[in-house]
Length: 182
Image 1 (cartoon, one colour):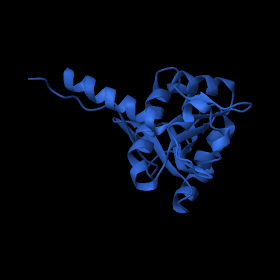
Image 2: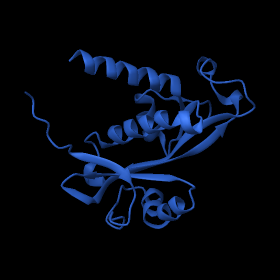
Image 3: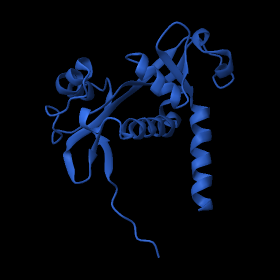
Image 4: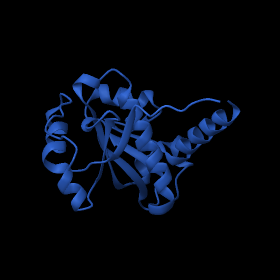
């Protein structure tokens, strides 16, 4: 019989016990947001803020992301993705407004873990809130490449990228099928 080990990381809502002051990702606007604005946004229900911490140091923030509701005009969505969206004047979406990893954890896959968790949460909550896609506004070209490398499609003449929820659902179903075959 296989023994299960404790997970190395946990992702949870930002709380008072998390050390926001000790977080630095190297991008001043992302650091300032977590330290000065994130708690207010949560209280006002403007953004949901989730942090990743190591199981053995639960107060230390390794990375974070934010989620909130968003809308897009259908005309900005590439033709290939339009088959996945309803024909409404505005398309409901989930925005990953910010995603950052602490400098000392960068390059170790933490960004991918945070993104996967954000996508799973967006997918799971779409039945409650209604959302046809996930949207990100990449802070720079490197971030845009990160999102493209994870299946997002960049919109013309911008750093805005999208991924239909149907695509996320297909990935989740494939993972579940693979897990049951092991």
